[in-house]
Each structure stands twice: as structure tokens, then as C-alpha cells.
Image (cartoon, rainbow, N blue to C red; front, side):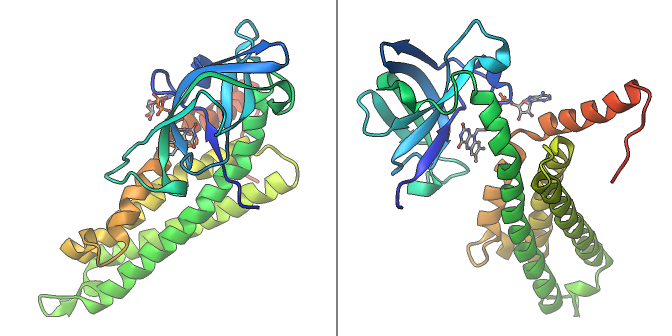
Amino acid sequence: GTARSFFSMTEPEVSGADPTELRTTAVLDGDEWVIDGHKWFSSSAEGAAFGIVMAVTDPDAPPHRRLSQILVPTDTPGYELIRPIPVMGHAGRGWSTHCEVRYTDVRVPRENVLGEPGDGFRIAQKRLGPGRIHHVMRWLGQMQRAFELMCAYALEREVGGAPLAEKQTVQNWIADSAAEIQACRLLTLDAAHKLDDGDEARVEVSLIKFYAARVLNEVIDRAIQVHGARGLTDETPLGFMYGQARGARIYDGPDEVHKQVVSRRILKEFREGGVYTFD
Ligand SMILES: Cc1cc2nc3c(=O)[nH]c(=O)nc-3n(C[C@H](O)[C@H](O)[C@H](O)COP(=O)(O)OP(=O)(O)OC[C@H]3O[C@@H](n4cnc5c(N)ncnc54)[C@H](O)[C@@H]3O)c2cc1C
């Protein structure tokens, strides 16, 4: 089909890293949910057929049972796309937008809730593991591209009568990048295998999310440095890639949150008298 969706969770007024504080509400009125709230960074909302909106359906429930995911067709009265937010200088178009959206007395049928009311977190967790691996797969492609551009230019560009490739600093960047990209590939495969085996792989997914986001940024940064001023121009894709890569350390959980997940799980093993084994 041609219908696109978007995921509408993050709000400008409260922390997205801690979604227990979300303010958008959905209240049952007869057989309809009535949704009110303000979101931003609803990626791909422009041109989408419907949004998956995270809303508080039971404010008195334990924090992880308060939220539900509700489908909202974008032609529903009260749904308003305020603007695509310019991000790093680009407002994007259609699929590539990150939109500010308002829901005012938006009414949708009761059956538009995904799963049961209160399942919002559970569904998000289920989606986020494989979703994060997908991000890293895309990043691996970007890393590879930046790496190839760096190596090719290091051989081509002469400084002081010799190719840049003969400078030890550049050799270090190439070697470090090669090791880190390969580490990302193997960490991704490891996490993917564990997910395939039915494991939640929380540690493995968080490890690869923050580590690959850092490697992505560093490899592109090194490639730009090797290119000098040309690396910042539109003669190579590196400048654009650099702008896109920065968000990787924030979306689907900032670095700090994933590091917290990893260290908490590891420390739990030690606290209980065990050790953490790498398998
Ligand atoms: C390109 C892009 C696309 C996005 N797409 C979507 C989308 O489609 N749908 C959607 O709903 N949202 C989307 N988001 C939003 C994203 O999920 C949030 O930005 C993210 O969850 C962080 O929330 P926040 O921006 O409110 O930062 P906050 O939660 O306010 O955090 C700010 C900073 O505080 C620090 N911090 C937070 N928690 C901790 C902690 N526990 N320990 C230490 N430090 C911490 C981190 O450095 C963090 O960057 C997107 C964001 C970006 C950049």
C-alpha cells in the first residue's frame, strides 16, 4: 500500500527520555477516545495517513501502565500539523520531516487503541529493540560510505609533496575507523541473533545503540577532516551526513539513557553475587 504512518510520542514541554511524564491525554467518551495534547518530533508526519499517538489513558495506574498507543487518521477533525521543524538547517519534506503537531478534542473510535489500554509502553519496548537495530544497519551503511571517501581522498590528496595517506594521523584514523566499524557490525549481528532467538536483548541493543551512534559521528568527522574545506561543501555527501548523524545520539533514547540501562543490568549481576559474562 501507499499509506504512511508516524509515531507521535515526544512533547516539547516534558522529557522524552522519561515518557512517564507525558501530558497528552485520551479520555473515553462513550465509544470514542477524545485526545488532547501537543507533540513535536513526530517524524514523517507530513503526508502521512495516520499517527500512532502515545497518550495517558489511566493517570492513576503504575507509571508503565498509564499510556496507550492510539491510531489517529490525519483527516480527523482537531488534528493539526503545525509545522515541520527545521533541524540542523533542514525542514525536510514529507517522509523526512520532524513535525510539531497538536491534537484538540480529536475523536477516534474506541477500537483504535493498539492492544489493550495501558499497553503503550509494552508495545513501544517490543518495537524499539528491532527498531534500534534498523537504525544501526542504516548507520553502518553511512559509516562505510564515509570510510570509503576518507580512504580514497587520503590516497588522492597531496600535502607537502606526499599523499595524506602517508601521514600517521590519517593512518590512525583509518585503522581506528576500521576497527570500530567492524566492532559495530559484530555487535549488531550479536544483538540481532539474540532478538531472533526471542531474547529481549536489552543490554545488547543498548550497547550497539550508543556505541554505533558515537562511531558514526566520529567516522564522518574524520572523513570531513581528511577532506579539509571540501568536506564541508556539497561536493561530497559528508556535510549532509554529518548533520543527519548528530541526532543518532538522541533519538530512540539518548546515549546517557542507554549507558544507564547497560550499567544497571551489569551491576545487578554483581550486586547479586554473580559476574557479567560476555557470550
Ligand atoms: C532526528 C530525530 C527524530 C525523532 N523522531 C521522533 C519520532 O518520530 N517520534 C517521537 O515521538 N519522537 C521522536 N524524536 C524525539 C526523541 O525520541 C527524543 O528527543 C528523545 O527521547 C529525548 O527526549 P528529549 O528531546 O525530550 O530530551 P530530554 O528527555 O529532555 O533529555 C535531554 C538530555 O538530557 C540527558 N538525559 C536524559 N535522560 C538522562 C538520564 N537518565 N541520565 C543522564 N542524562 C540524561 C540527555 O543528554 C538528553 O539528551 C526524534 C528526535 C530526533 C532528534
